[in-house]
Structure formats: structure tokens, C-alpha cells
Image (cartoon, rainbow over all chains, first blue to last red; front, side, top):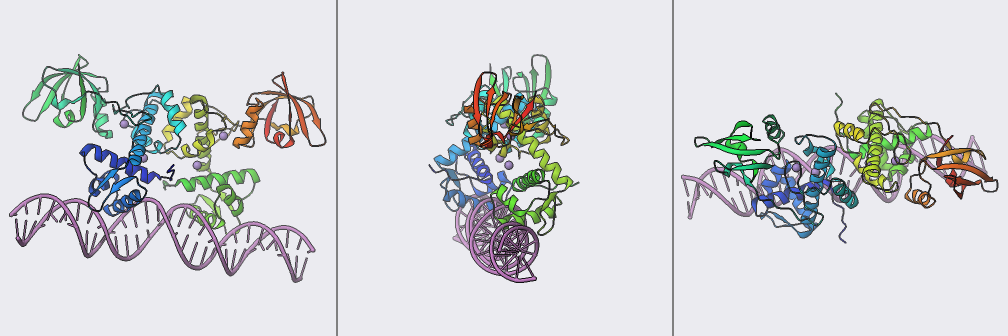
Length: 223
Length: 223
DNA sequence: AAATATTTTTAGACTAGGCTAAAAATATTT
DNA sequence: AAATATTTTTAGCCTAGTCTAAAAATATTT
Ligand SMILES: [Mn+2]
Ligand SMILES: [Mn+2]
Ligand SMILES: [Mn+2]
Ligand SMILES: [Mn+2]
């Protein structure tokens, strides 16, 4: 039932609303959506009305948007597809983690339940994508992992880099230049109170100093 | 450089024009395009004007369309991508040859030179797709294979099924039901003048009788 | 060569998805 | 509580891509 067609533009908005809802824990306002989508506020108002008419979001004038169950299911499935394709690109086609996002942004819109199921199986049912983000299963359930931001870790603790919060090419390439990839072991050696930068030992052999901005974008699993 | 953006709709028209040009050996008329694209004649006229303005086709009122070099390059690359994705779906994800077309129809529009190159490599640079159609290389060159329609083969000859002309689900499933896949060996045992049907020995063990309509849609490579 | 049939274009309309500029509503400061 | 700032909606416009119905051009028959 309810097999209305849904356009790529609509799908992208749903995904943006999902992420804003998730991050802020409340309804997504026009401003936040227009920033995420890089469109004008007027366009957002139009689209919110369209999505509301299709029962994909709950929307009232001046009160922002939240996803309905249908909208949530669609958004979650998009995230699932996006992340599975990213795994495909990295694991099977040897792309780097800083190159895959824009391609997955297109691939996530391919319509075929069977394709997603087969791809998932082909990839060995991965639970996390190349950036450490969880891949929801076919029912939309995310795997949660116990993790903390590096900036919150105390001196002397050890852990492993398991995810990044920033996904920009420049950030990812900076991490590459430091040989900081997912799975890297880190030990906190020192924290400089002046600017909250930290000195770390990585993979038990190299020392680096990371700025607070960087530390706030790295997820660590403590050992 | 001519890095104009090109929409999926435009791409699909270019591909349709390419195929009509190729099959008929002359410029593609409005009627043929509207049938291929399942759109109205009026829509075709509009689109031909748009494509002509972008220098992707040569078009004069009432004289049909042919592709410019740019248009040809784009169409050929779409066919390359379409067929590579079909190989991926069949070889890597175990799809059947009658299921892949509509999915490849979407996948062919993903924009990434690097993706196509990596996919091609990942698949082992295949020269033919699951229907036996040649896959053009990165420069747009097709591999030609010496082949004949089964309907043209003489009694007593032997050969191998290497391609299909029809791509409909029902035709492909009919072939499956006869266990006639690409690579099947066939020997012509008898031809019935009454309706041009033929009796064949397949894989040196089973006999089948195929109608003229079927024979006209199977490509055979003689041994 | 006319008459008839077919193909193609024109005219006018519609939806999706975008924009800018201005008005209205809501939030934040003073 | 006013004043000011920010966010959201409205109004009006635009392009891409589709449609139907009618007119014009071209092709085929008679
Ligand atoms: Mn997308
Ligand atoms: Mn990712
Ligand atoms: Mn297509
Ligand atoms: Mn094919």
C-alpha cells in the first residue's frame, strides 16, 4: 500500500530532516533544513507542504517538521543504502573514505529492495560504514556502539578510533596524513589546558598533537 | 570545456536516439523516439530542440535527429555503464538475466568516471553483458563478434548461443524454461518449411523445437 | 494529381522544484 | 514592554519535462 512515487529531491529532504531531528532531538526548522539542503527558505516551505500532503512528515506552519512512521522508514532505508554503497566502494572498488560520499549520495536513490538485500549479503552484512557510522538493518534498527569523543577522554586512557563526526574531504584527508584511520590505537599522553589540544601515541609507535577541533570529531572506543 | 550538466531525461533520449540511428541506419524520427521513450510526440519535439541547443544532436524540423560527436560519446558511455552494471548484478549479486535491465536503467546515470573505471576492472573488463551485447571500452569502441541469427543457419550446422535480440522478461524466461542460456551449444537438426520453425539439439543431449519468432531473436556463433 | 493517411509541430496547460524580495510571525535584547 | 533580530511564509517568477488537441507538413494511395 501507499506506493506513491517519491522523487530524489523528496528523498534527500527526508534524510536531512531525519538527521536534524536526530541531532537536535526536536522538530527540524526551516533554517536548518535549508542549510542542510543548500536551498532557499522559500523552497523548503514548499517542499515541507508537499511532504506533509504525502504524509511523510508532520508539519505545522512555523513549527518545523518531524517524520511520520512512513517518512522515518524511507529515511532510514536511504541511510542504509547510502552506507552499504559506501562500503561497496571502499571494500570492493578500493575507493578512499574521503571520495565515497558524493557517489553514495546518488547510489542511495536506486530503487530495488532486492538490490539492497543482495548488496548487503555480498558485502557480508557490514554493521558500520567506512566512516564508522552504523548501518541500519532491513528493519531499520541501528547497532549502537559504546563510544566517546576523543576530547572527553582522560589522560592515560587507551582506546581505538572507531568513527568520525565530520565527514568533510579535508578533515578525512588530514587524518590520512597523520595515518589516523579507523582501527588506529590511541593513548592519551597529555592534554594542554591552554587550547585543549592533546598529545597522543598512535599505534604504540608515533606521537601526534591534535587540536580541540579535531578531538571533538573523533569517536573512540575505550579498551 | 563543454561541461554542461545533462539530466537523466536527456541521457535517456540520447540513448534512444543512438539505438534508433544504429538500427535504422538513418536519422531518428519523432515517432520512433516517442515510441522508444513512451512519451508524446509533442514532448519529443520539445526535447529535440533542447538537445539541439546543447549541441548534443543534429536536428532540423521534420528531418529527425542524429547524434553529434559529443552526443555520441555520452550515449556510448551510457551503454557502457548500463552493460557493466548488468554484469555486476548477474556475476556478483546473482541476479537473473531477465531482472537486471530496469535496475541498470537507473544505475547507468550515476556520474563518476572513476566509478566506471573501477567497476570495469573489478568485473575483469568484460566484453559482453549478460544478454551477449558488446560493452564499449572507455574510448567508445565496441567489440564486434561474428554471429548470425539462428533463423539463418542451415541444417546440420553447429554453433553456440551468444546473444539475444529481444530483451523482454517473457522471452528471457521462456529461454530459461528451455535451458537455453548464453553458451548453450546448438545443432540444427531440421527446419519445417511450413512455419520456419526448427528442431535443434542443445548441449548434445536435449531436443527442442523453436518457432521462427524465437529463431529470429537468437544470435549464434558457428563452430 | 488528388485524396487520404501519417508524422511532426504548435499552442496552451500542468506539476515539480527551484529562485528573489517582501511581509508576517516568532525570538531575543535592551 | 518595546525595540530589534531572526525565522518563516507569501507572492510572483522561472525552467524542465510532461500532456492534449489542433494545425501544418510530409508520405502514401488511389
Ligand atoms: Mn542523495
Ligand atoms: Mn558514511
Ligand atoms: Mn536510464
Ligand atoms: Mn543488456
